[in-house]
Image (cartoon, rainbow, N blue to C red; front, side):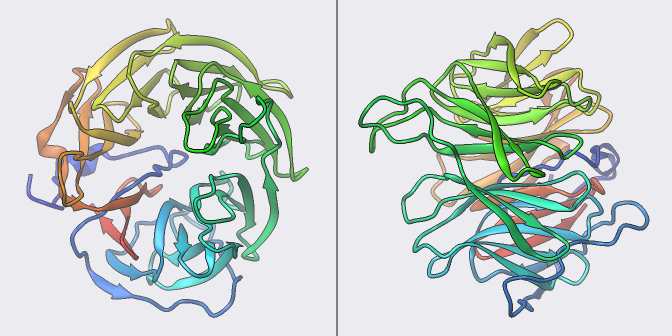
Length: 387
């Protein structure tokens, strides 16, 4: 397939459930025009309209003047939220109008020198954006910020509670987050404690945060040292996370999540996860080019040999379950080469005619709720590509 060119067949198969937002990394060649238009304050209207279904983004390149770390899209498709690192002014979230390309608001998370953001997620109703960030140069992600999208202001900024740890160790880094389907709980992953410049020790956990109470309400230890993605089932009763040891199933139907079971997952690395829209199959991909598919009714795991030697991340499943899309980073390339791959979930084989190539230096990628628009963060820009 030619770089940055989609086929009608792919366009038809890219119907992804609106609740599934792909966050991760991505870049592409120049698409459409260029916009800048940054707002002058640190707050402003961040929410999109509520009428009609999700809209497609308009192809264009938006100048951010900062290094983007992650991106997510509002449920109506009218706003893209980009977490950026400003080398002089700390961690921020920039809000982009997906129709005009204007930066309509800039929200400061931390003004600490070298502070930077991590993953972010939008609540199902679009009223809140949750984002992880650090407070100083070389410091790990340690704080969960919550932004009110109507006012463009930070309504809470909560450091993770300390975790049980041996003397001389530091708290583990926050790694991932997911919002429950009703928006009432945010789940945050945390690595085990570690000594400076040393591997983490056992003690990974999942934290529960209540946006209403603006407080962490529970901490669930999980087996392992490192924790990857968290995904929540549509019914709100179950969540899944991946560690360096196991795939972990959490019972989230009660006030305090508990570990309901584990499945050995021989992926060789902490994977990124994606759940099929019907909640029956779970997929994981990792940084060694392999992955797995789990039938959740039977807990049967099948391995997937996708792209040996490559780094796979940010998987997302088509609404009909027929395709698994993911970002591939070429670890052997010196020019940041990357691609978006499509895998046939029935056969476990890649579909070359449905991939996007010609990508490089990807730092963030989101698939809009219209299921036809990619939001690609590269260098200091957000590039919107309508397929």
